[in-house]
Amino acid sequence: MTADQNAAPMFKLYGMTGSGNCEKVRIIADALGLAYEWIEVDVFGGETRRPPFLSDVNPGGQVPAVVFADGRRLTQSNAILLHLDTEGRFVPDDPFRRAEMLSWMFWEQYSHEPTIAVRRARLKFLSMKEDELDPKLKAGGEAALARMNEVLSRQDWLVEGAAPTLADIALHPYTRDAEDGGFALADYPGVQAWLARGASAFGRASSG
Ligand SMILES: N[C@@H](CCC(=O)N[C@@H](CS)C(=O)NCC(=O)O)C(=O)O
Image (cartoon, rainbow, N blue to C red; front, top):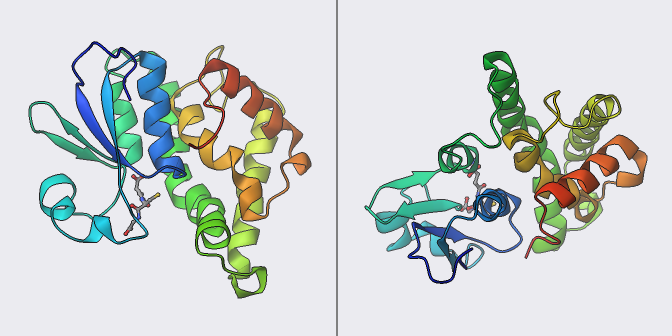
Protein backbone atom coordinates (compact mmCIF):
# COMPACT_ATOMS: atom_id res chain seq x y z
CA MET A 1 0.00 0.00 0.00
CA THR A 2 1.23 3.48 -0.75
CA ALA A 3 -0.16 6.89 0.07
CA ASP A 4 0.62 8.02 -3.47
CA GLN A 5 0.18 5.08 -5.81
CA ASN A 6 2.44 6.73 -8.42
CA ALA A 7 5.35 7.39 -6.09
CA ALA A 8 8.16 4.85 -5.81
CA PRO A 9 8.02 3.24 -2.38
CA MET A 10 10.66 4.72 -0.10
CA PHE A 11 10.58 1.59 2.02
CA LYS A 12 9.15 -1.87 2.41
CA LEU A 13 7.25 -2.46 5.62
CA TYR A 14 7.20 -6.08 6.74
CA GLY A 15 4.35 -6.64 9.12
CA MET A 16 1.44 -8.73 10.31
CA THR A 17 -2.15 -7.53 9.99
CA GLY A 18 -3.67 -7.34 13.48
CA SER A 19 -0.38 -6.41 15.16
CA GLY A 20 -0.51 -3.05 16.90
CA ASN A 21 3.28 -2.76 16.71
CA CYS A 22 2.98 -2.95 12.93
CA GLU A 23 -0.13 -0.80 12.72
CA LYS A 24 1.53 2.13 14.49
CA VAL A 25 4.09 2.25 11.67
CA ARG A 26 1.28 2.32 9.12
CA ILE A 27 -0.41 5.12 11.06
CA ILE A 28 2.62 7.41 10.95
CA ALA A 29 3.41 6.56 7.33
CA ASP A 30 -0.17 7.24 6.25
CA ALA A 31 -0.40 10.41 8.34
CA LEU A 32 2.77 11.75 6.73
CA GLY A 33 1.76 10.59 3.24
CA LEU A 34 4.85 8.39 2.82
CA ALA A 35 4.97 5.92 -0.04
CA TYR A 36 5.67 2.39 1.14
CA GLU A 37 5.01 -1.21 0.25
CA TRP A 38 3.32 -3.41 2.84
CA ILE A 39 4.57 -6.99 2.92
CA GLU A 40 2.44 -9.38 4.96
CA VAL A 41 4.49 -11.82 7.03
CA ASP A 42 3.09 -15.09 8.37
CA VAL A 43 4.33 -14.74 11.93
CA PHE A 44 2.27 -17.60 13.36
CA GLY A 45 3.50 -19.82 10.52
CA GLY A 46 7.08 -19.17 11.68
CA GLU A 47 8.14 -17.01 8.72
CA THR A 48 9.98 -14.52 10.96
CA ARG A 49 12.10 -17.27 12.47
CA ARG A 50 13.69 -18.65 9.32
CA PRO A 51 15.54 -17.41 6.23
CA PRO A 52 15.11 -15.39 4.12
CA PHE A 53 13.36 -13.17 6.69
CA LEU A 54 16.15 -13.67 9.24
CA SER A 55 18.94 -13.10 6.74
CA ASP A 56 17.42 -10.35 4.62
CA VAL A 57 14.98 -8.46 6.85
CA ASN A 58 15.48 -8.79 10.61
CA PRO A 59 17.96 -11.12 12.34
CA GLY A 60 15.93 -10.41 15.49
CA GLY A 61 13.05 -12.42 14.00
CA GLN A 62 10.24 -9.92 14.51
CA VAL A 63 7.95 -7.52 12.71
CA PRO A 64 7.59 -4.64 12.14
CA ALA A 65 10.75 -4.29 10.10
CA VAL A 66 11.52 -1.69 7.50
CA VAL A 67 13.88 -2.01 4.55
CA PHE A 68 14.67 1.27 2.82
CA ALA A 69 15.32 1.66 -0.90
CA ASP A 70 19.05 2.11 -0.21
CA GLY A 71 19.19 -1.21 1.66
CA ARG A 72 19.29 0.13 5.21
CA ARG A 73 17.10 -1.78 7.66
CA LEU A 74 15.38 -0.62 10.83
CA THR A 75 13.50 -2.53 13.49
CA GLN A 76 11.65 -1.72 16.73
CA SER A 77 8.35 -0.03 16.11
CA ASN A 78 8.95 3.07 18.18
CA ALA A 79 12.40 3.70 16.67
CA ILE A 80 10.79 3.40 13.23
CA LEU A 81 8.16 6.00 14.18
CA LEU A 82 10.83 8.46 15.25
CA HIS A 83 12.88 7.92 12.12
CA LEU A 84 9.98 8.22 9.69
CA ASP A 85 8.85 11.50 11.23
CA THR A 86 12.02 13.26 10.04
CA GLU A 87 10.43 16.68 10.19
CA GLY A 88 9.04 16.11 13.64
CA ARG A 89 5.40 16.71 12.87
CA PHE A 90 4.46 14.55 15.83
CA VAL A 91 7.49 15.44 17.97
CA PRO A 92 7.34 18.35 20.45
CA ASP A 93 9.86 21.15 19.95
CA ASP A 94 10.41 21.55 23.66
CA PRO A 95 13.21 19.19 24.83
CA PHE A 96 11.43 18.23 28.04
CA ARG A 97 8.16 17.48 26.25
CA ARG A 98 10.14 15.45 23.72
CA ALA A 99 11.64 13.43 26.55
CA GLU A 100 8.15 12.94 28.01
CA MET A 101 7.04 11.59 24.66
CA LEU A 102 9.90 9.08 24.71
CA SER A 103 9.07 8.21 28.30
CA TRP A 104 5.57 7.14 27.24
CA MET A 105 7.01 5.18 24.30
CA PHE A 106 9.43 3.24 26.51
CA TRP A 107 6.60 2.66 28.98
CA GLU A 108 4.43 1.36 26.15
CA GLN A 109 6.97 -1.31 25.36
CA TYR A 110 7.69 -2.27 28.96
CA SER A 111 4.35 -1.97 30.76
CA HIS A 112 1.49 -1.69 28.26
CA GLU A 113 2.26 -3.97 25.31
CA PRO A 114 3.59 -6.88 27.44
CA THR A 115 0.32 -6.97 29.39
CA ILE A 116 -2.54 -5.75 27.16
CA ALA A 117 -1.22 -6.92 23.79
CA VAL A 118 0.11 -10.21 25.10
CA ARG A 119 -3.22 -11.02 26.77
CA ARG A 120 -5.04 -10.09 23.55
CA ALA A 121 -2.72 -12.27 21.44
CA ARG A 122 -3.21 -15.26 23.73
CA LEU A 123 -7.00 -14.96 23.65
CA LYS A 124 -7.52 -13.82 20.07
CA PHE A 125 -4.76 -15.47 18.07
CA LEU A 126 -3.72 -18.46 20.19
CA SER A 127 -7.30 -19.25 21.32
CA MET A 128 -6.28 -19.70 24.94
CA LYS A 129 -8.95 -19.68 27.65
CA GLU A 130 -9.20 -17.04 30.40
CA ASP A 131 -8.26 -19.57 33.10
CA GLU A 132 -5.07 -20.50 31.26
CA LEU A 133 -3.71 -16.96 31.45
CA ASP A 134 -1.31 -15.57 34.03
CA PRO A 135 -3.42 -13.29 36.29
CA LYS A 136 -0.54 -10.79 36.28
CA LEU A 137 -1.40 -9.92 32.67
CA LYS A 138 -4.87 -8.72 33.68
CA ALA A 139 -3.62 -6.80 36.71
CA GLY A 140 -0.80 -5.21 34.74
CA GLY A 141 -3.10 -4.22 31.89
CA GLU A 142 -5.67 -2.68 34.22
CA ALA A 143 -2.89 -0.70 35.92
CA ALA A 144 -1.66 0.56 32.55
CA LEU A 145 -5.14 1.66 31.47
CA ALA A 146 -5.74 3.31 34.85
CA ARG A 147 -2.50 5.28 34.50
CA MET A 148 -3.46 6.49 31.04
CA ASN A 149 -6.98 7.30 32.18
CA GLU A 150 -5.75 9.41 35.06
CA VAL A 151 -3.61 11.54 32.72
CA LEU A 152 -6.17 11.67 29.91
CA SER A 153 -8.92 12.82 32.23
CA ARG A 154 -7.07 16.11 32.62
CA GLN A 155 -5.44 16.61 29.21
CA ASP A 156 -6.18 15.76 25.59
CA TRP A 157 -2.91 14.01 24.73
CA LEU A 158 -0.41 11.93 26.67
CA VAL A 159 2.14 14.74 26.47
CA GLU A 160 0.45 17.95 27.51
CA GLY A 161 -0.09 20.19 24.52
CA ALA A 162 -2.45 21.07 21.72
CA ALA A 163 -1.47 18.28 19.33
CA PRO A 164 -0.85 14.52 19.39
CA THR A 165 2.71 13.19 19.50
CA LEU A 166 4.32 9.91 18.53
CA ALA A 167 3.40 8.66 22.02
CA ASP A 168 -0.31 8.91 21.16
CA ILE A 169 0.30 7.01 17.94
CA ALA A 170 2.40 4.34 19.66
CA LEU A 171 -0.27 3.70 22.27
CA HIS A 172 -3.32 3.93 20.04
CA PRO A 173 -3.67 0.49 18.38
CA TYR A 174 -3.20 -1.83 21.35
CA THR A 175 -5.31 0.43 23.58
CA ARG A 176 -8.12 0.54 21.01
CA ASP A 177 -8.02 -3.27 20.74
CA ALA A 178 -7.74 -3.90 24.49
CA GLU A 179 -11.27 -5.36 24.64
CA ASP A 180 -9.96 -8.33 22.63
CA GLY A 181 -7.73 -8.92 25.64
CA GLY A 182 -10.63 -8.90 28.10
CA PHE A 183 -10.33 -5.27 29.21
CA ALA A 184 -13.46 -3.09 29.44
CA LEU A 185 -12.70 0.32 27.95
CA ALA A 186 -15.98 1.68 29.35
CA ASP A 187 -14.22 1.63 32.72
CA TYR A 188 -11.77 4.21 31.34
CA PRO A 189 -13.74 7.14 29.90
CA GLY A 190 -10.68 9.38 29.62
CA VAL A 191 -9.01 6.73 27.48
CA GLN A 192 -12.13 6.32 25.34
CA ALA A 193 -12.30 10.06 24.65
CA TRP A 194 -8.58 10.07 23.78
CA LEU A 195 -9.07 7.12 21.39
CA ALA A 196 -11.80 9.06 19.59
CA ARG A 197 -9.55 12.12 19.34
CA GLY A 198 -6.73 9.96 17.98
CA ALA A 199 -9.01 8.24 15.48
CA SER A 200 -9.99 11.58 14.01
CA ALA A 201 -6.44 12.97 14.12
CA PHE A 202 -4.60 10.00 12.65
CA GLY A 203 -6.57 6.84 13.25
CA ARG A 204 -7.24 3.80 11.19
CA ALA A 205 -10.66 2.28 11.64
CA SER A 206 -9.38 -1.17 12.50
CA SER A 207 -6.21 -3.13 12.96
CA GLY A 208 -6.42 -4.47 9.38
N1 LIG B 1 9.69 -4.43 20.56
C1 LIG B 1 9.27 -4.84 19.25
C2 LIG B 1 8.23 -5.93 19.42
C3 LIG B 1 7.87 -6.54 18.09
C4 LIG B 1 7.02 -7.78 18.26
O1 LIG B 1 6.72 -8.24 19.40
N2 LIG B 1 6.61 -8.33 17.12
C5 LIG B 1 5.81 -9.52 17.12
C6 LIG B 1 4.51 -9.26 16.36
S1 LIG B 1 3.59 -8.00 17.19
C7 LIG B 1 6.58 -10.62 16.39
O2 LIG B 1 7.15 -10.38 15.35
N3 LIG B 1 6.60 -11.82 16.95
C8 LIG B 1 7.20 -12.94 16.33
C9 LIG B 1 8.27 -13.54 17.17
O3 LIG B 1 8.68 -12.93 18.18
O4 LIG B 1 8.68 -14.63 16.81
C10 LIG B 1 8.71 -3.66 18.45
O5 LIG B 1 8.20 -2.72 19.07
O6 LIG B 1 8.83 -3.63 17.22
